[in-house]
Length: 259
Image (cartoon, rainbow, N blue to C red; front, top):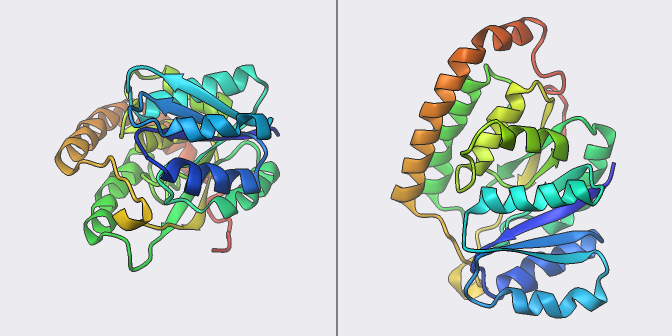
């Protein structure tokens, strides 16, 4: 197994370097940043670090095309470079970079599996975000007949690159905010084992450099349309999903992972 940390980034300011990239490099040598049409110059400080870190790389996507499109660009390039797995890390500092090594070790033990971070929220988490994601999680569970998607929206994950690229190839969607739930469902449809990994999440305040690209109406509309499409796909795949369910379902669903 060969893993690269992939960080899609759009206008995340100083948080990109100070919080995310620096933290990732303390835990893992191969870190790639996909700059998704940023206009704030946030990648310039990262570019200055390139001579100091042989495994650090900057990829650029113009114009802004969305998180999913940035991950697609990075994962296709990762496959060409010989990487078998990517660990996605949001650029806004919410994900704990000090958990990268434990994710990588778990992936090495189960290389065929998709590792899904399952957020452990603190008091800083917006209640609307915590409660609202339950709706998407319920639909994702239905669309996969309970294959084991613990959280459909959390972005810290380890993807087998081949399974992720196959999921991308199956649809022209999943290129923006709908990336995380859409790819989780489509990879589950492939019969890939899933492991839910309890993972702390931190919401930075504006004073700490916190930046969010989430837009409540726009992104929830996108998710609603996504689930309508996935339900149609679910209907077509129902016989296969029922057969897998009768054979025991996700073989790693009961695996216990410490928080």
